[in-house]
Image 1 (cartoon, rainbow, N blue to C red):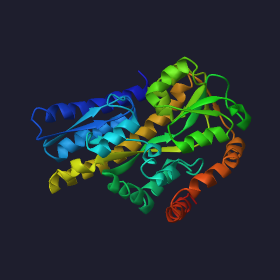
Image 2 (cartoon, helix red, strand yellow):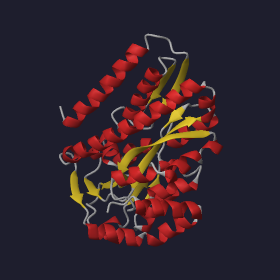
Image 3 (cartoon, rainbow, N blue to C red):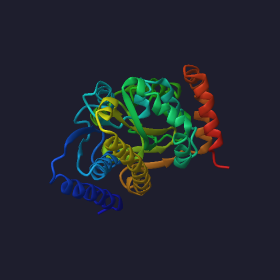
Image 4 (cartoon, rainbow, N blue to C red):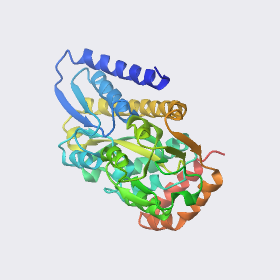
Length: 335
């Protein structure tokens, strides 16, 4: 059994056993949480941990049922459900949330974070808090930034070793204007679609490739229908644990505080799981797909190619927020 499979099984066992014990007592309140990724992905592992913590901290008064792998819909669908109050929790990408507040898209700008710790410092600062607070007027409460990781490109045609290797490749992207423009400006052909439709699109060669963190590439088994994985690390992908404000408002003060406390603990757990799995997967994926490093010089060429696109996207955001975010990026950069 592989190292990361041991880790996943242990995480699922702990979450499952705790939930099983607490379910012997009937919960006063039953809530639903939907995720778009499988049980073995850090998004859903974090969701299960959040569920367990909520039950523990409310002494079984609140049960959070987790529906994984897109059972309740894709990120866009589930975010709309949370906004409407028909779903209690979900964990969309910040790219999805940019449809509610375009300022969220600044997190996805390419090549701006040094590493995961740099991203943590920025997103846990006042600029991250401001983004979460902006959701309140949409009927959503942001409970914390989670991690999907740095994104890399896979495809079935050729390794991406230079900027020119992207020419003409049909690359699936999220349904997000920034990612669509990013790949079109790199001379690929961006094809937006939900992640739960992607495996079939790769298998049937509707698209040549896609871009995602290692954990998504592994849990969605994209290596079965892709030949090359190129370590571009072109963008950092954050997730956000969100709740329906109407659900939280229906709770008494003690239970609401317990849910918020559970969210803070689950956030730290989820980030740790994500990083441990991403690190373990590099060696494991190397046995399933041809992996190549992309030279820093080529990544810098890609960044330069995207400068006009980035300027255009930034011009559509709140000027004061852009300034604050840029200051946070610089002040938290490793010295």
